[in-house]
Image (cartoon, rainbow, N blue to C red; front, side, top):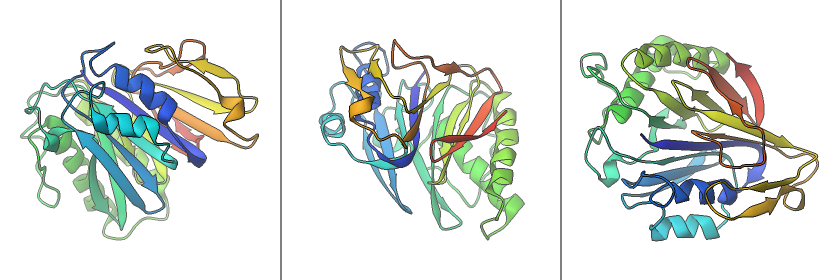
Length: 259
């Protein structure tokens, strides 16, 4: 299986600390050696870095760990291939445009008997993974239901996506992260957790490598930062473990929906 990482924050924040822990799982403390990727949102724009090499060995990953790109929404993924070959086009996250926004998605899990389910026309996969095809199907269903103009009630959109995710979970394991650049949604099939950090901040130590950070020195009293991951990344903090079928929606670090 793959592993997921995402962040929602109320101020531009770097994800170097969490990504450092995740990258270790791409070949050092975990078997996820079949590529990795990360997307940072900056306003309506986004920048994506991908590599088909293990994150623990990738020169691009070293750049991310040393260069603190600040963003309010980040999605990252390290891959252990099951559907589709090891290649750049099969690495997550995947991005598509809808309503003038870049939507970004990453999936952990494996689906079976899904080809007939995911009939698509408007959105076509570039690679050959079950993950990307499922993403194309989700966006196609959303576009068909809500039309060509962005709805005023975006919470209704994500509630509809949750019903689609539940349908996909019937086909196998479907842990998902999805964002329109403003909201950050997570859907749990079997393994997802999250933590929201706010004042008073303290120190945190990564599980996968000997790195400690004092968030009190890196933040202000008004900062709110939520991190979502497949498994907890720190050993001295209380992560909220999500249950199967549980989904959340965050905006600017704050929890909007918890179902």
